[in-house]
Image (cartoon, rainbow, N blue to C red; front, side, top):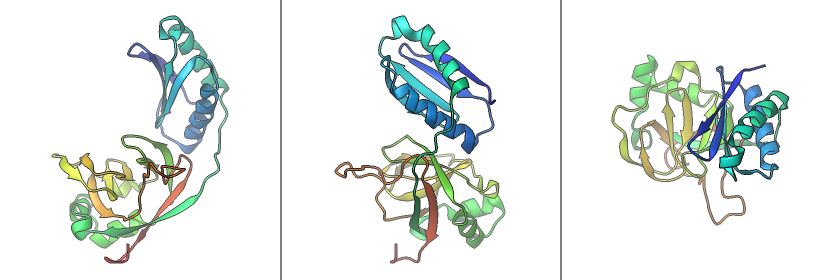
Length: 218
């Protein structure tokens, strides 16, 4: 079993953090533990991440130490949860003004621009969790050959729909925001709509496939 450690975070939260490596199997167990914790009356909020989970307690002064012990035990007892998922194909225009860092990524990786696009669009990515922004999906599955450091100087504003690479991660910015990921493309699809019944396009467990489009089609 993958080892984990629990520790206090601030005055009101407990973190369970797994040792590497990151895997879909361990993430599915995190989803299962999240569901169990959400049903506990002593828990105010549960925030799953990649290889970790943060639990906000209702009465941390009296429950913190007990919470550490209980969460550790529940992790050891946890079972994988495989949520109902969808395969979502997202159209992307790569390069040009839509992907200003595509050439830089290609140079860093020792690939041609077309090879970067081909490899980025050849994978079925899995949504591990949502964070950073409403609807921002952290996707697992980026090819090791495309791993690229974040920009040395973040942009003051990244347009909504921008598709980027940051280290070993890839994802889509749902909203315009400052950001340091390498932007390689853009989609016109909305990742977050607060007025919709389901505000986020993607949910944990979904599979994402990027579909290259010509400018004017996306």
